[in-house]
Length: 146
Image (cartoon, rainbow, N blue to C red; front, side, top):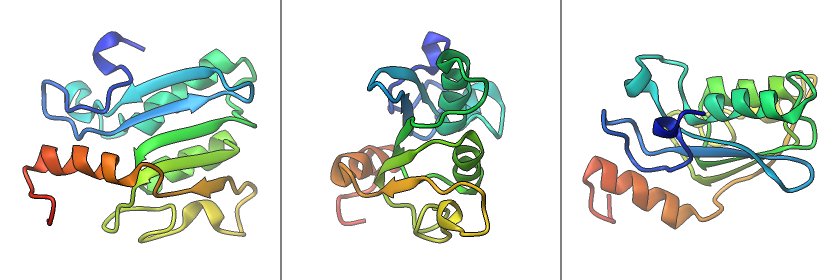
């Protein structure tokens, strides 16, 4: 992963939303980390989760399957990222802030727990929620009360 698209969840030089993601292998080792790079790359799919999943698949050594791995992200994944996590077969998704407008891991939708899918990762939401939400509030210039 290029350094300019690394693991920090701070906003990039071109104003990317401050979302960071990492993938942890079954042995607890960090396989990959990424930050949103949609603006920096001009790529609508360059969400932190997708970038981290791509890099982790290359590092993990089991093709595209990330079975037993954990996707950790500062913001609840959207439908694209939730779908990518299911397709990658991650074992767990852990996220910080809930996203009531576009969240697809329990807020607006619950893509990952749909029983019609062939894989359903475990989900742990709201972990370090206050810290994750503070990053987003700072990015949008909002007060703590909204």
